[in-house]
Image (tube, rainbow, N blue to C red):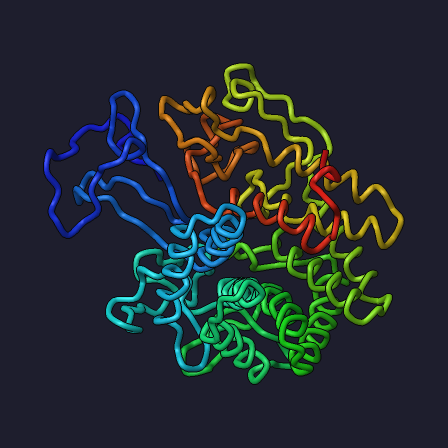
Length: 440
């Protein structure tokens, strides 16, 4: 997604109405092209349009509100009010876009004016993954709406506990949770995609578990018994229909197949409900879902040719997890399970889950750009950035994977970094450890 890596064709002057290349990370210095990717879709140079283009995503890959919460935590640590102001600006922008019934598009730039957008209905004879429209967008779905409600609740609670009252943030989260409680189905639970009129457009998938995860936080933070009722009801549903068949689907939105990350919210919700209710079945749910998630984990190092990226940059596969059958790449989503597997080890006494947590953490903290090692593929990366995917397989429709197995992509996506920060926060705030040493 970083295009024009050598800086050809960059104009001397850009129109005033678009983002300009101004900082040291943006101004090209051939043969390097310094481009920072602040969110899921990112920032990159479009040589044909002669502009930088940006995408902003509320959850999934962009995690706008989770990033905002991390900024607030850093403000509380340092006193730097610029961080607080930036976080609130991000969330206020999303407040303006939410529909009255609580639904929200995944990407901010899909909105044209106000809450309007240029939706082009997809071809339902094709799978979701072959029909994703990143320009105009897709219908509101449970992955991004679940993350949005979950993170806005946590942010509201954090601000409130530190003397900053933002009732509109709580109202934002409650509108989403109330919508899905009102529209729960005994046939498909929370479904996947929804029209703004409240009609479920796509019912399949375990992806609705992201709403279940958010409902657990909704109950813990607000005490609303209705949220607990539907968290339990939906988790029972997804376990019986999907996890009992050792299947999870549709959490990776650009795939239509079994995948790994959809099990993540199931694990989190199950452990939360075990802590809330003390009922053993939820601990068993967490362990079963964790076995499913761990089935995507490599427990050995794949041998690669010496000339491959993986060999050149010293990446090893042990502890990594594959994304899905349709998108066979290794990524860092497993890092989000580190605290959950530590919780599971504490509650079950099975220390192998702690071993898996550390194995995942070590794997997911590879190839992070630092002051001394920040040039990948001839491009200087911002310090602290990390690419999303490590292509270990010959992924058929991607030429770079077919001709160059063991390739590292250049997608410096937001979630890989903010998940890492979230793990460090959860070690003390959720697991209640005194420090981060459990992952040493």
